[in-house]
Image (cartoon, rainbow, N blue to C red; front, side):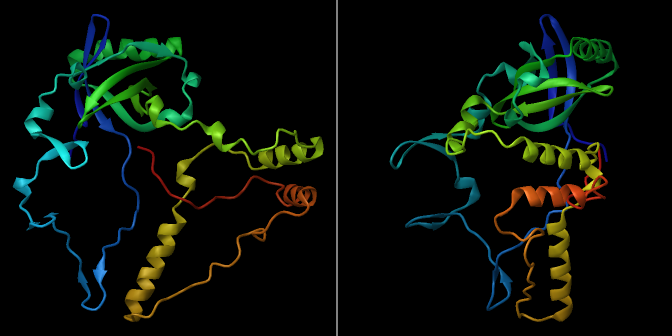
Length: 278
């Protein structure tokens, strides 16, 4: 089954328009979902839309409303919201170009693949891709989709383009307010050298497939065990203390020296989430 486009429209650079399709670049992993169950009966709990004093209501009686004061709402039909005029619903205009390292990682939200809509669009698409690659720049623009206008960044990605949605400035907290209590003192050179050596020992190229979600695996084992036992009795397994003792490090120098001495080679294959590259 062919992937469904998340957005269809055109990228516009000055007087050049390029018809494109945008596809989500990520997918849900092996997440385990739970339902809420009424324990005495063993049946699943259902939720109803209710109005205080009136009881349950039909879905076709529900409309969107924006609260302008306590208990007072402006009511809007879906058609009214959909009719809001915004050029970025169909056109993604590239308005600025920046170096990629100028965008703080805090602002990046979600990645999407961008492909030309048809063969006629390919030439202009390839020119844009290669121009961005040659200039080593990231293009910025805004895109309206699913009831919101997103700030986006676009850069080359193999034979295509990668679009990443960005958070707006008012969506990002300034970190310095959380760091005010941290001492300004510099660490001792020997401690810094040991920590740097430990980082070097554990350095390796990033490969997402080296990681698996251990929590999901542990939950699956618990579910299998409980299903086989057919018992309502809770199965509690003590995870024990975290590796390294779990308490405060009393002798940082000794701990770092021991860590460096015990890690002569890069770390072996780790297990956290196994994600296949798209």
